[in-house]
Image 1: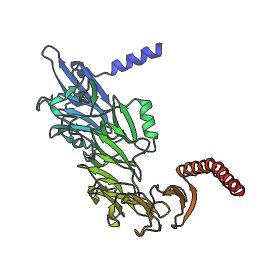
Image 2: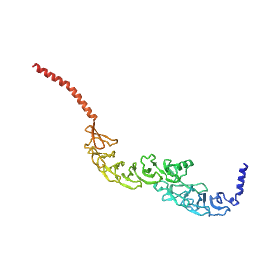
Image 3: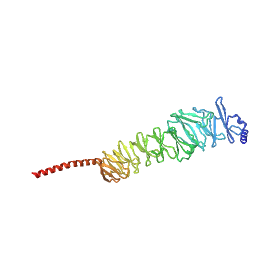
Image 4: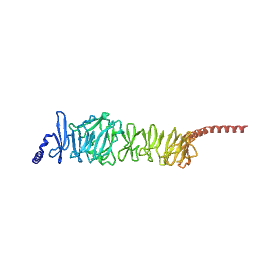
Length: 429
């Protein structure tokens, strides 16, 4: 107890006299950040001073904590309703990053965030200690969120550093910049992929460096990869779909599409303006948006498509491989697809050639190494090479045969009795 009191006494004794005129201060070895507050008129000012109390900066509205050799500072000048503009200075008082931002944060591991007007929205970027932009959050892809005219500034009284902006979405408080608790932060840093988090009905994505790759504005993320794959994950904003990189978490393909399918053979079927087309991983259109229906590309490099109410097949370049003339055309399996024409079914190979001699009244696509078809109530087994083998008769024909047998059985005794009666008459005469 004596030692503790002695330490406090020594620290107080070493406190320089010139420091008494300031209401707040922080010590950073040989420099101080000090603040004078006049509560009567709600004014305050901050300085960086040396160990002798000499001012190294002009008066600023606020100066934050030094981290990574830099401290955030806020100017006095108002700017469109903000308390001032934010920048960064070093311990000599030199401005390293000019005060051109509406909000900013403390450096961590050489990275900080800054907030600024961007059209109708607030923008968010991450900077290094030289002021170079590391990443810009694509807020423009979320045009209904982070609007300037709906933003409310959030800061502590007499402190303007780390000023943030908040919005109310469906009566829930949200923000553009996010700070995580230490346990969540530990999970984020350990994650192998960008961390996807959920808040009040919305999703966001942050990487292991705590850089927000996607703001908390997504309405859905395909977490089970039902519609995703090949390095991209499907996401939704409002009623439109886009894709993010599974590796970086960044939005690769913006929200342009009404529907999507699971990718196959490096192609992504997506729907726009009511029509299906294909894009690649870069979002480039590789098959035009002209199809009313489109199936996945199978290993045979074929996909079933519909155009003007007719079906056929195309390959991944968009070239028509099966004429688009059929009532229906199935996917390929074992190199074979089912087609329908004039309400009858047959099977074709990848060249479009019909490989079955017969056309059937009922059929289905291949799933296994054979398929069962029907013609005139007779069932046949069809193999992938087009071989057709009789399998069995239908229940209808079995019923007919049974009924016929019963008729024969019922008629036979009567015919037998008539024959005996006729023979007997012949003997008498």
